[in-house]
Amino acid sequence: MKKLKHLFTLVAIAGALTGCATQDSEVALSKPPKNTVDDRNTYSIAVFQDANRELYKKDYPDAAVVVRSAIESAFVKYGKHLVKDKGDIEITGIVTTYHRGEFWAGYERGYTTVGISLKATDSKSGRVLWTASVMKRTQLIYDYDPAKFSQEVADAFVKAIVAKTEKP
Image (cartoon, rainbow, N blue to C red; front, side, top):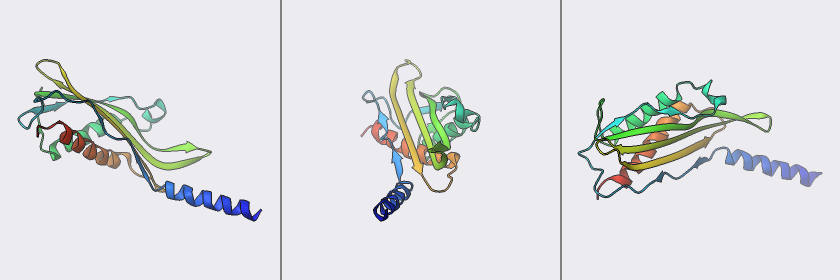
């Protein structure tokens, strides 16, 4: 009985420590064609699609707007010139997941998940320059606002995209 109690204690401690970790997917980026992305390009960001699960769409009806805004801010932060009309490069996006907490084993876990997929297209030729996707989940004991987390995800995501697509 005492060994069983110790086992449950160890499992509980391991669960608590795991609950404070961040689980990320690497930024998946297709290889852009050579000499197509540079600092002279202007960018336009189209309205994002919301592919979030129906369960979460009712709780977060503005997920696509929030994530698009976060991506837009991140592009500006990393020195990209955004225009309202059609830019040289058009960015389209899909919010693949966006939520806080989930029922698991009969109780709500307090982690937030944000997933984003982007596609960059040359506005003149229609050629796809690159596609990228990321999903990040922060496991916290306390609630974490998905809107705030989406900005953190967007900043890291765009930073990685810019580093991999700019000319050396």
